[in-house]
Image (tube, rainbow, N blue to C red; front, side):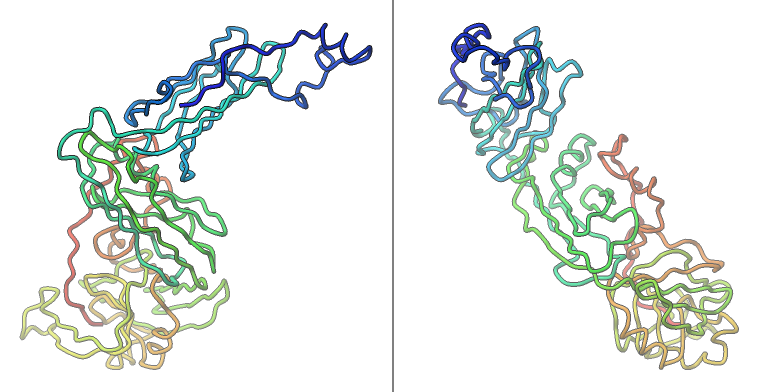
Length: 423
């Protein structure tokens, strides 16, 4: 760590006035303190960093204390050579600042301290130091890897982001460290948050759907950061993706109708059929997961025995998947007579082949299907696709480790990647 000499270089106002001549008021009470050059605050503060020539233990917090009883600290910033900022907290009276987030090992840091004396004059000190290996590093420590998803490319405005961890993180405090290190930025900017799906998975979504044609970037600042006694952050590849147009299908099950909107404009109305009693289509918001031009659908995949009056085994065209358990929007030429009038499917949304082909060509991964007025349950948030938007913003924020609670989220249902079910 480098520290400025502790020799004061304060020059009295009287001496300055004599040397510069009458009328100079730079040190008088009527002077402009804000335009004056900041004084050297080296002897006004103490710093907990290492002594000269030594390296800091990254597991120990930083602390800056105001040594002058008539002065105070007004601001402290600490950042490493890679641009990662260290979180900190400044006492209300300006007497002390301490770090609240961990340091990285083998990293160079710069700490900038701003102060103010009893007359309002501003001071400044810049401190530099490097960290070494943690002094209390446990044997067998693991490195926590992070894999961001869904991947590079262009997605619909409903696409949640994902972060998969290489090891489980249970402790709320450790979850907070991890979450602070997972950075998401977008252009245009949005208000968003991470939500812990389970001990190894996080999802990120904005408060509202993503803006159209946005650029979204994800990166991890966790490399070499201490997360727990036996866990430190590892390397992670950043990810950049884009959003496309705002494409949303609204399905009114009771009216047997789908209305498709693009960029806020209604572009098509389609007669549909949805789940009949006992096989009701799920209500709520669903995100397009994938598209299959031809898929074989089997009733046995949803527990219907062969030979039953409800059994089926058939090829289905232009199938747009919205749940992993087999709910699709697809062509259903066998039910054209019911489309627009009755619900006769086993849970999917069916339509004519021409409409299904148009839907298939128009919708892409991350686009949205909103279902209302069905007798079915609401789409589950996790475990069967992306039902993230079916949580209110308050519920979503409650799943963040930085939202003032434990950071724990309800365990998701086990993901069931069943074979598809037909309409």
